[in-house]
Image 1: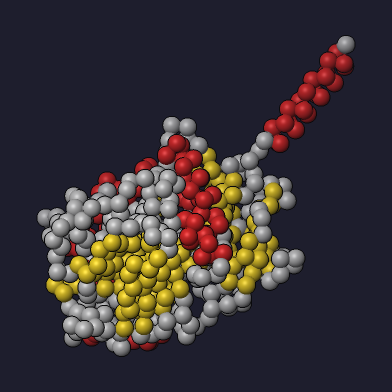
Image 2: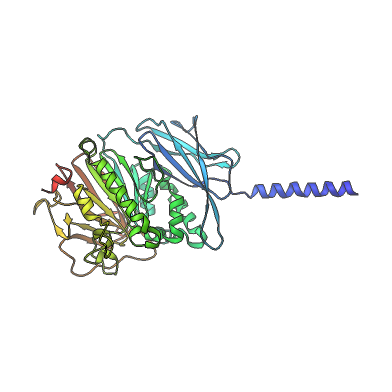
Length: 442
């Protein structure tokens, strides 16, 4: 009787183990790419709901010959919501890639399961080529009207990367971070094929920005360190700088980081503007969520004459970024946050500095700002003030996104796509610069 009972208990235990194992959620999902420290690297990030013993990707130049293997690691992320949900964030660096070549890959493990096979093109080498980007801001799960357009464009190979200028999912922490999961699944048809380069927005603030901080993998190319809040990277003739505007507005999270970021920005700009580096990559483009300039009719900081990010912290008036960027000759400043598209004339200290009356963006005498914050979310489009300041050039209240094509050292094209109008072009302009750096302002 004892032996029979023991056998029965053992059988039940084995059945329970089998049942539990069957329900372990170890299938890779939410796969997305980002640039590494140089053109020979691509980073793959994904999520599993349960731990796996391995984080690895198999890749190669044919889908039937994924003969290269790269191994990485997983971090255990505990969401700050009431359920304290646990996610496992996996990161693998694909290295020694041949510049400009197409690679096929899948990720996972033999014990946990494998993803579908995806593909990407490694970054081209050098600076003598013309990268093209989709620029989006403020994109949610609900009313994410630009997503199908960008998915379609990615499937046709139209962009080298997607630049997301803050605010994801609305919000990634909602429903104990399940909204964040849904968003990343929604973006997989985009972000699994091209680098998805991001900066933080105000909608990521919950639990000290932890969902944003853990889900993405932005590598500062100079230090080689992961830093999703401020980092820089090079693509062709451009030096990109991504940074956090949110340190200035969530002082409880960012007070100690404002100084750290400001000093990092200054050091990065010093390095990028050394004559040998500026000659190689003359375009310097910054990306952050909250703009210095806007003409929307709300209470956001950019509607004030002296915005914090532009002029610095109240009272102490330190760490303002407009003078820093102007003094180092930053060319283009990309923003979002306002749920509109707005293009500025070349502007510094609220004054317009066009290149000329007929060709304002040819050899402009100040940085060029634009806002692309209407990719689509449930918060609707923002209203404009009826009489904007002289520095506001074009204002559009359509949902949509921006295409940016960097042709060479002197020409960048910008095209605004209206998804409200079925993909129609509603604005375009070209910035032409024969001289880069602060001497261009003279």
